[in-house]
Image (cartoon, rainbow, N blue to C red; front, top):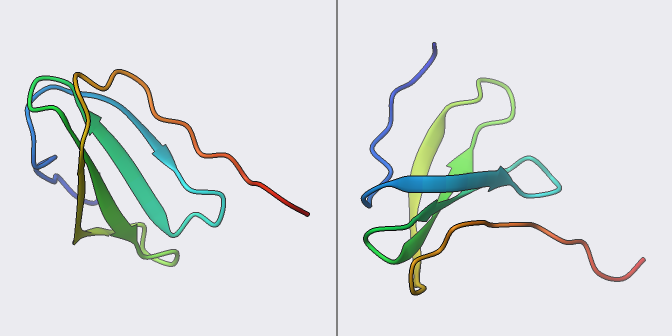
Length: 68
């Protein structure tokens, strides 16, 4: 294990990486928020970006690539 990180919310229900692998998105179901972490591609270590979205009881997150 490289890192233990607080999810900045309660009950992290789901998470996903963006298509580039640069960001990890975590859905915290009890605190009604989605938090974005920056991921170091070489080390895999995460840092909080300060980006947070309020969403009622998020249970699943997906990343979709639009366009060509």
